[in-house]
Image (tube, each protein chain N blue to C red):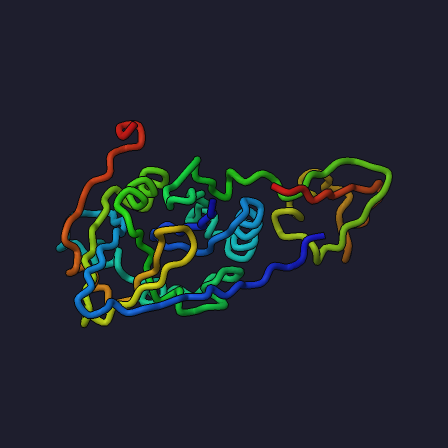
Length: 140
Length: 114
């Protein structure tokens, strides 16, 4: 008989962007239009959107997770994720993170996946490139 | 391989070393929050961090339990999630009730690792 599952905490090794460091991360977005509200919204966390932590997930045991957004350390991982799950969006934004912007990051989960903590407007303005993702059938 | 549950905003919800654990957690989340069924997906990532295999939605999940007729059985209701209880209910609608799932004629609820 299965036991009731409990939320598991995540050991977040959160760190700031170091002085002189330039970290480019890749976030899936639904529009390439920087002026569109949906573009900035793509950088808002569940917490900022006033969505509560979900039960049975690290969001409940580690609420800090709810205050960040996911990104990847490689374009390929982000693009292939978008191809696998098109509902996420059809574009990958390259986000250039530098020190002094109040942005922190924490790697967890799969290799190359990280949660980025920062102001949504700041993050959206740190986008340096937006690339459309081809359909999976077109990419092969 | 790591299994991530992603939401429709592209945020990782949880990460697992095994597919079974990812399946179980997705079921538990949807048991608690049925609307999440349409918003969550499991993706496997290989050791290089690249997605591998097909995404798995809640609807793609195999049943958490397999129900067969047998000459015995009882399952405490507290041990089963809503999806499992619904499965038993659908398989044996006339034979489920009370604080436990002990029924007559009995139904055997077997938890299988999917």
